Amino acid sequence: MTLSPSRLLAPLVVGLLGLALWALVVDVLGIGTFFLPGPGEVVTALGESWEPIRAAFWVTAVNSLWGLAVGAVLGVALAGVAATTRLFDGMLGPLVAILAVVPIVAIAPLLYTMLGTDQETPRRIIGGIAAFVPVFINTLRGLRQTTPLQRDLMRTYAAGPVQRFRTVTLPVAIPYTLTGLRLAGSLAVISALVAEYFGGVNNGLGSAIKNAATSNHARAFAYVGGAIVLGLLVFAITAALERLAHRAYGQHLDHRRKR
Amino acid sequence: MIDDGKATVTSDSPSTTPTSESGDEPATPAVSLAGVTKQFASKQGQVQALADIDLSVAPGEFVSLIGPSGCGKSTLMRLVADLETPSAGTVQVFGKTATRARKDQDYGIAFQQSGLLAWRTVADNIAVPLELHKVSRRRRQERVAELAALVGLEEFTGHYPDQLSGGMQQRVAIARALAEQPRLLLMDEPFGALDEMTRERLQTELSRLVRKTGAAVVFVTHSIPEAVFLSERVVVMSPRPGRITRIVPTGLGPDVVRDEVLRESERFYELVTEVREALHARPGAGS
Image 1: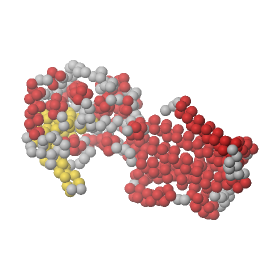
Image 2 (image 1 turned 180 degrees about the horizontal axis):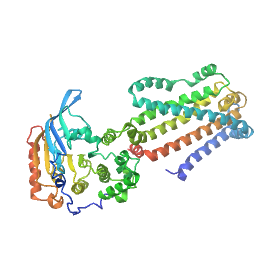
Image 3 (image 1 turned 60 degrees about the vertical axis):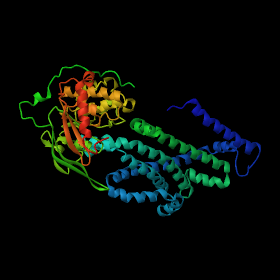
Image 4 (image 1 turned 135 degrees about the horizontal axis):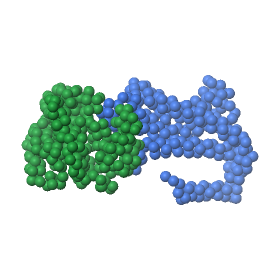
C-alpha cells in the first residue's frame, strides 16, 4: 500500500484545522489563557527549550527501547516454551494475565524504592513488563496457527521437529510476533514515560513534563510534543516491520482479514 | 482464470508398463491391508470407522475408494499414509510397515486442499519435500523444473499460491507429491473443491502423469464418474462401520487412454451405472 495524496492530505487538513481552532480560541478570543497556552507559546517554548527537550527525548527513547527489547525477547522465548510444553503453558498463563493488569502507576514507586531512585533500571523493567505481554500472547497464538493439514504434510515427509519448526511453524508465527511487537512498541513508550513521571532520576520526558506542568504550561506542552514524536516514531518503525513480515510470510493472513 | 492452457491430452507413448518393471520378481503389492479395523474415541463413545478391511493394490494399479461421507474412505487412506494407526489388522506398503514406508518416503500424497505454503513460490513449494530430504540445491532446481513442466506450470514457478486458481494450486500439490518419484500416490479427494470443467481436465492430466510415472494410486473420491474414469478398480464402501461392499473392476488398464472419447463411451456409462448401483445397494448408503 502506498500513500496516496488524499490519504496524506486528509489528516494534514484535520491537523491544520485543529491548530487554527486552538489558535482562535486561545490567542484570538482569549478563552482559557490561564490554563491552556496557545500554539504560538508552545512553539516558542519548543524553541527555547530545544536542547533540554532533545536530551529528555533521548533518555526516554533509550528507556523505551530497552524495555521493548527485553520484553520482546522474553515474550518470544517464553511463548516458545509455552507452545512446546503444555505444563509451562498452564504455569505461564495466569502469570501473564497478572502482568497484563499490573498497575504501572503503582509499581513504579515500588521499584524505585527497591532498586534505587538513581537508576534507570526500574523504568526499563516497567517498559519491559508492558512490552512482554502483547509479544508473548501474539507469538503464542502464532505458534499455534499451523493447520492440521500442514502438520499432516510434515509428518508424511517424515520431517523432524526442528525441520517442522523451520519450515512451517516459524514462518506462520512471525507475522503474529510482529503484530505483538507493534502493540508493544507504543506500550513500552507510554510505560517508560509514566514510570519517569512517578519518580526516579530527574531526566526523561516524563520527569520533565511533571516538572514543567506546575511552573510553565507552554514548556510542558512542548515536552508532551516530544513524547508524541517518540511514540509515533516507535509506532512507525514497528508497524513497518509488521508490514514487512506480513508481506514476506503472511499472504494468508491478509486474506483472512479481507473476508 | 489463467488455468487453461498447457495441459491437454498428450499422446505420449506408454513408455513403461508398470507391471513389467516388477515382472520377474514376485510382485509385492504396493498396498496390502489385512483385517484392518479402526475405532475412534468420541463423546458418544467408541466409533467404528472401519471394520474388517482387506484390500490389496498392485504396483502401478489405480484404485479408487468411493462411498458416502462417513464410510471411512479417507481414514483408510490415512492408515496407508501412517497418519493414523489401525486398531487391529496390518497395513503394509511395499511389504513394509506403514511407518517404515512413510519414513522411507515410499509414497507421495495430496489432499483436497493443496496445503501450499503461502509465503513460498510455486517452485519453492514443489521443492519442500526435496529440501527436507537434503537434496542438493542444483538437483532441486532441476527436479522442480521437470515437475513444473510435467504439470504445465513452467511459466508460473515464480508465482505465489494466492496468485493461482484452485486448479493450478492442486497441480502444484500434485507436482509436490511426485517430487521424489514415489511408486505410490495417495490422494484424498484432490479435485473435490474444483469446478467440473477444471476437474475433468485435471483427471485427464492425472491419468497421463500416472501412466508416465507408473505409480500405483489410491484415490479417494465421492464422484462416481471420476472413480470410473481414472481407475482400474473402484472400491465401493458403506458407512457405520466403514466396510468394502463391492469392488468393481473397470477393465480400463493403465494403457487405456483417458479422454473425451472414453468419457462418452457406452462402456463408461455402464460402469458408472454399475458403481452407482453398488453404492445404493446397501441401506444407509444412499445419498
